Amino acid sequence: MPKSDWPELAGAAQQRWNQNAAFWDDYMGEQSNTFHNLLVRPAMERLLAVQPGDSVLDIGCGNGNFSRHLAGLGTRVTAIDGSAEMIDRARKRTEGRAKGGPENGNAGSLDYRVIDVTDSERLVELGRNTFDAAVSNMAIMDMAVIGPMFEAVHGLLKPGGVFVCSLTHPCFQAPYAVRYAEQEDRDGEMIKRFGIKIERYLTPRPFEGLGIVRQPVPQYYFHRPLSVLLTTCFEAGFVLDGIEERAFDDSVKADRELSWANFRETPPMMAVRLRRLD
Ligand SMILES: C[S@@+](CC[C@H](N)C(=O)[O-])C[C@H]1O[C@@H](n2cnc3c(N)ncnc32)[C@H](O)[C@@H]1O
Image 1: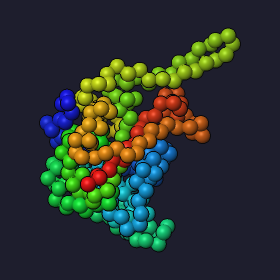
Image 2 (image 1 turned 90 degrees about the vertical axis):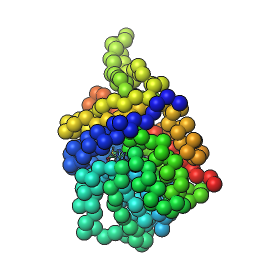
Image 3 (image 1 turned 60 degrees about the vertical axis):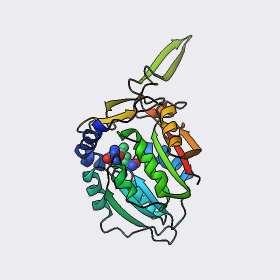
Image 4 (image 1 turned 120 degrees about the vertical axis):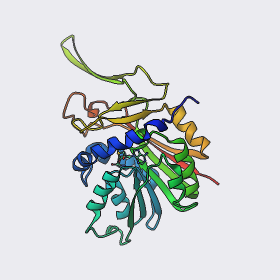
C-alpha cells in the first residue's frame, strides 16, 4: 500500500483543531447542521442500531453533540477527542444536563476523555472486549494516522461488535476536487448542470481545507482512496457489512449555487459499518 499515515503531521493537525474548537462548537452547537441532521445522523443511526444499555466508544467526538444524542438513546458513551479544547467545550455543554434520555426511560451515561488516537496505546488502555459499538462521526479524514487506530478499536470491541464511521466521500471531496455549476440556454430552455471535476484521487495525500467557511485556520485533511481506506480496515481484522452514500433530495432548497443541496446524484458523505467477527 502507498504511504497513507502521516505521523509527522499528527501534532500540527490536532493543534489546528484546538485553534478551531471554539468556532466549531459555536457553529455546530447542540443541534448540529443540515448536513449532519439530514445526511450523516440518519445513516449512522441506521447502521449503528444501538440498544439501551450498549457501551459505545465515540472517536473524534468534537463538541460531543452526537455523543449526547447516543446517551439520550440510553447508551453508555465514552467520548474521546484529541483536542483538549473540544473536550472542554463538550464537558461544558453536558454540565447540568440530566444524563441519559427520557425518550425511552433508560438513563445513559457520558464519559469524555482527551485521547489522540494517533497514539494507539492510549486506546488500548480502554480495555479489550469492552464496547458493543464504536463510532467515528465525520472524523476519519481528519486523522493523520489511522492504521493502528483501526487495529486498536478491533480489540476494544466485543466479538460481533461494530465500528460505524462516516466521512466526507473520498471520491467526491478529494483534494483539488472542483464543484461546478453550468447554465446553458438551449432552444429556449435554461438548462442547469451541477457536477464535480476530480483531478487527483488515487494517491493518498494530506491537504489543508476549510470544513466551515471563515473558521480561524484551515484544518488538515488526509485523503485516502477507498481501496486504501478499506484495505486498512480489512488488515485490522474487520469485515464490511453495511454502507450508505447519501445526497440531499429535493426537499432541501439550496441557499447558494454550489451548495451540496444542488448535487442530488453526488453524495458528499458516506458511512460504513465494520464488524469484528471473532
Ligand atoms: C469534523 S470534527 C467531527 C466532530 C464530531 N464527531 C461531530 O460529528 O460533530 C473532527 C474531530 O476529530 C477530532 N480528531 C482529529 N484527529 C484526531 C485524532 N488523531 N485523535 C482524536 N481526535 C481527532 C478533532 O479534534 C475534531 O474534534
